[in-house]
Amino acid sequence: MTISKKIYIDKSVSNHRFILRKLKKGKKVNNIYCIIYTEDMFLEIINSNKINEKYDKAVLIGIADSRRKAMELLVNIFDDVYVPNPNIDYMKRYFTTNKS
Image 1 (spheres, rainbow, N blue to C red):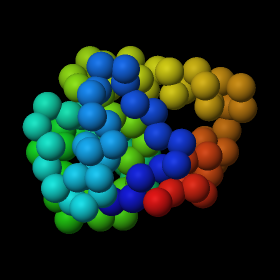
Image 2 (cartoon, rainbow, N blue to C red):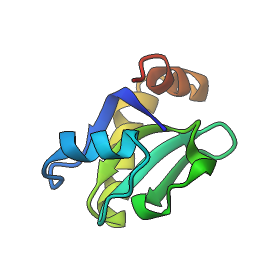
Image 3 (cartoon, one colour):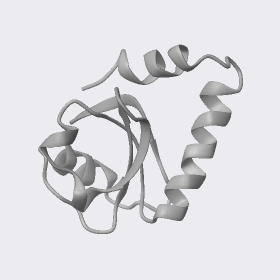
């Protein structure tokens, strides 16, 4: 999995740099929900413990410590990125052009 340079991190997530390093290496992190971009599903919220090789080509665009907060973060993402420019292709490029 790659990580977008424009990742959204919920304020309740502590040690986010450590968490991002682990996720980038494909390791599981307890109590973290990831918002990921995939070609086939577009956006998906998934518990980091369920990430497997199926998500190798996914781009991580947000993390939160609960599913509810991940959904709230997704609303923020849409407000910040999609509402000003209501174009799904723009939103995809926004998160996928600059990734690590």
